[in-house]
Length: 116
Length: 115
Image 1 (cartoon, one colour):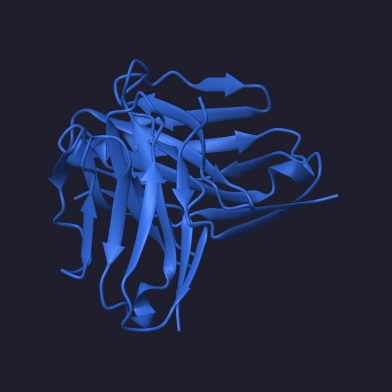
Image 2 (image 1 turned 180 degrees about the vertical axis):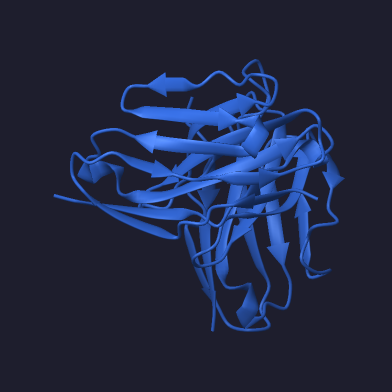
C-alpha cells in the first residue's frame, strides 16, 4: 500500500518569507514517482513537478525548489520569497510502477496563506 | 492544446436521482483517470482507462458508480441513485501521448451537490 503524509494542514506566512511544505511517503515499489500539485481557489489542480525515485538531484525552478531525500522518504517543497499569488492548497502525490496505470495517491494537502 | 475539460462544472441533484459527468481529455492522451475529492481532502483515485479499456475499476466506491470511454476519447462517469454522501468534486485527468507518461493533467472538476 502507498501512503503520503503532509503533516502541515495549514501554514500562514507574510509575503517575501520563505516557506517549506513537508511531504513524507511510504511505498514498497522500487521504482516510483513523486509529484507536487497546486490547487488555487479556482479549484483546478496544476502540475508543478515530477521526480523519479532513481534521481535524487534536487531541483530549482525560479522561486520553487524541491528536496528529495530517499533515506528519509521525504520530498519537501520550498517557496522562496513567497507572494500572495502562491496562496493555494498544495498536494504531494505518489505513483508506482505496480499501481493501476500509475494512479496517484495524494496526501491530505497543505493550505498556504500568504499575507501581504 | 486546450487542456482537459469537464462538464457540467456544477450539478445539484436530489437524492435518488442519476447523474452523468463528461470528461474530454487532452487529445493525444491515451490514459484517462477519474478521482473524487471531498472537502479538505486530497483527491482519491476511482478508475482509469487506457484507450477504451477500463483497466482498473475496483476502487469505484460502490456498484452505483460506473464509467465508460466508448471510443477511447471522452469519458463519462455515472452515479445511480445518488446519496448525500456522494456530494464531492469529481476530477478527471489524462496522461500519455508523445509527452511524458507519468504527468497527469487535471480538468476543472464537476462539483456535485446531492440534496
